[in-house]
Image (tube, rainbow over all chains, first blue to last red; front, side, top):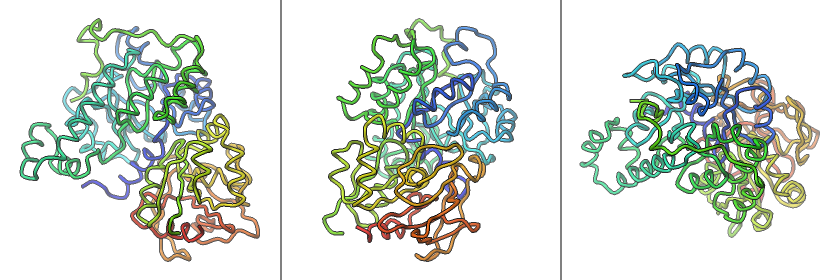
Length: 296
Length: 186
């Protein structure tokens, strides 16, 4: 297995983020609002996914001055995104000392066959996944945190639910199989055998499993937590809502008290009549514009 | 310790790892998110995580005062963010804390995640593997604070009466001795 000392540190920081909300921010001012609302980390980027979707074109790593400004504005961990396979962007972010790199399908992929060799880095990585095989391939490459992809920038929870349910179900199925059946499963999932074995034995991923892509309300956050997410990423859902500070606080509360319907009710009431971000129906998004299908 | 229940503050952070570590050390552990749940415990762990997030939820959920009162009669063990919450004075940046342990703590004092590290340290409990993650440093400790381990000359495991703090994460190792030591205070 890959559980050496450095890997434990990488996974360790992910453990510290559990039960929390990681918020996308595009300015130092937004980062301060996120921290004040109770975010456990922020993702520094130039445009939130819904704007990337609207603007089109190639989405790249953010400007360094922007990320640096956000790192200087808050005391919580700061993450930043690199394009899939763009190991040079990742090296730059590592040199900048960001706390986590998201090798993200939200940006335009730089390599349509290979992801970054993440074991080779000292900084930890998070990667998106839609199913168990994809999650285990990323872990095999060295990702220290998995987030279900959902459909970023859609404001629609349906894909996040689909991906979390898929991963949880596929893990559960492995736990009831005999050891002699696992190689066929590794083949079916296109995943490393040792990781299939680990999941079959433990019934969970060897790294924290967070949820992302479409979370727009406190109830959405509580839903994915109930389905097995250990923390949530909220992208466009906060700063594209009518009242970002209220939404941020309410989503933080819902992520902590996801099992307690009365507390989630309180969180829903805290947003008053403010509108959530406008959502998109997934079937109305052209196939070529889906972000979740990026990654191999 | 028999029949005693240890709570783990489960607002945010690696509370699940603490529950497992406490169980491995022989305790009955429960997650605590409300004042009623807190009142039903005999000791409490404040886990690692983000101290700013926990602090905000403590205030919004009206847990700050109950927690401070709890510390007057019952033992609390804080790791990393938990140690920050227990301190009397917090810097970088300054933030409110419970003032239960007479220590001054500087947040993220080793640097960012790239400066996180695993080291082996001598302690009064024997050699310990210490996992530091964006860890704080205890810059000063009052006369009633008893230091159990240091790293680079700074206290990293310390007690004051019934309370215990670690700036590292014993819950991320398989070694139950630090949790067992806390349980001996119940």
